[in-house]
Image (spheres, each protein chain N blue to C red):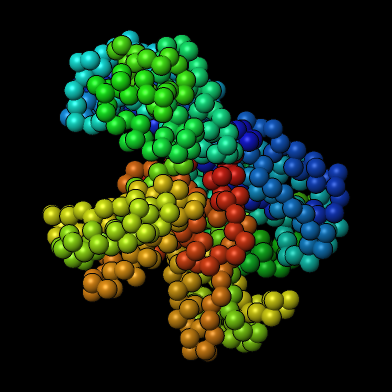
Length: 301
Length: 301
């Protein structure tokens, strides 16, 4: 890819995880398009949900995402949708994530463009969420989605839940969609040499934001029964501000209190290169290092 | 770049660092070619030498490098060449470095193809060196280049210095060239909170291969006068086998003996992403991590 090409990631979630024909119709607009790459899509029958991972240039992403939202409007009827995962629309949520040569401000502006256009084309009520939210109580998707599809018809009539774009009325079959910009999520877990879940929970409690810990860390304790270990399982919601090594070192510090040790960690799924470079730079005390020095960035830019 | 495209790096050195017109002629074949990218070229007037950094697909690299060697044959006369850096040919040395989807075996075979073809086209005697060397005493470039251009006419008449390709006779103006495959070099320096050069030298002595240290580490002590520090300045010749973190930790261990501390380190120039991922994975104790999880590799592959 050339010079300073802008690259974003997009992870749209659709409320269809069972009907293969419908799933293929929704994914079709992401295939073989110039300027976008379909990295992955996963369906879950219990959740009855489809999660797609895309990267690409903003304009190409915009066209493809809006087209797929149209397919979802066509093939999904939320009135007959059942699944374990909370949901409120045929296209449930569309996060845009700045990756290369895109600022968060640009990603926010872009998410609003997509929301406006999709609302217009499909007469769909749309909420802006996360960094694009128009008010603080809309930052958290769970707040917006509370009441789910079934409760949404009444909810959006309330002045404080007026949608940011589209009609102040539920789409009869497609419900409501949330669109917004956010930082990349890194799923990061730290393993402890203990089988005591309570210890993992207590440590999670100390390092996560909500209970007094690091600003961009969510976490819970998890038991890995087959390994006889417990784990602090985390979502790092902005690794550029709350670094992986910082939460790793902090968990080591907290673990001492319980006489347990950190035995390793794992990154689940994808991680931006920057997060690992930052970790390497910290531990080696690298001076003046920039991502321009990574051979691959020079090859690919 | 597509699927499993093969990518190599090439860092040809030419014996011209003063005449801009000649320099441009030699660099010209690397510009605007499909399948290769000219990352950098640097000239040094004292050394009277040009160092070019390229990446690209093997076949495109082959054509461009052979073309540039032809330009060097045309514009450089080694009989009138003067410079501080040891040299033996118009094209002095051409290392090929496997980067992506290329094994060392392939890189070695490829370097031999290039050497054979260049020897044929320009009636140039060529030595294979480093990993491509046909005998152990030819692995080290300094051994091959000993005697320099002025001594080469006699040297290559000796049976043990018969060139691997081309005539057993010096090219009248272009001398002799060395071509071979090697691993990427990482220039890595570790700083100590001492102004005693002797300490840096002693530590370098302990961590470098030649005097009993790590297999793929070369190193010397250096004084950073303006900062009042000394430095262990190293070339890591195969970071996949001698990891950066290992030499960093070993220098910390050795520094204790002298009561000095490591205060930081630096990477000079380019470094493959893998070297930093490996470092991050070591310090975080990452389990089961692969480069496929780095978002950028998924975007670019």
